[in-house]
Image (tube, rainbow, N blue to C red; front, side, top):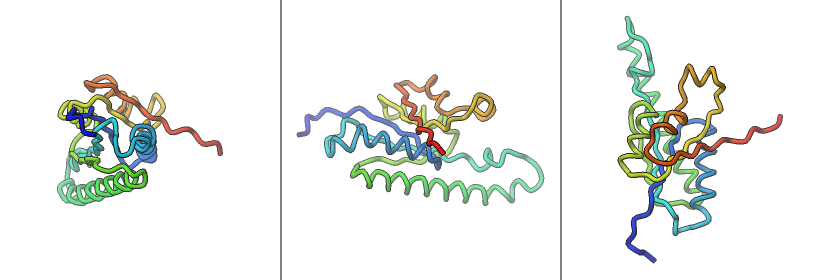
Length: 162
C-alpha cells in the first residue's frame, strides 16, 4: 500500500574489496530482504572511481602515456564493482536499487551523495586498517563519520579463525 510518503534514503558505499561486499550483503540481509518488497529505505549504492591522474600519482616524463591505461583499468574495475553489487542485490531478491558511479575521491563523493539524496544513513565496510596504515592512507569511513550529514554505520567483517 503506497502511502505517498517518501522513504528515507540509505546510501551504501562500495569498492572492489571483500569488506565492501560483506557490508552490502549484511545491510541487505538486515534492512531489505526481510521486508520484500516493502523496504524501509530507498537504496543507493555508490562507487567512487578514482581519477586516473590522481591514481598514477606522479608527474614527469611518461605520465601522459600511462594515464589512458590506468583510466581504462579503473573503468573496468568500476564495471566489475557495479556487476558484483547487482549480483548481490539479485541474490537477495532486492530490486529497484539505484547504483551510481562517480569519479573522484571516495570521501568527498560519499558525503556529496549523502547531501544530494538527503540520506538518513550511510553504510560503509571497514577495511580494518591499523593505526599506521590508516594514518598514511586515510580512512574513508573515519572521514565520512566526521563529515557526512547523516548517521554513518561502519560494518566490520568478522575475523575468521585460521
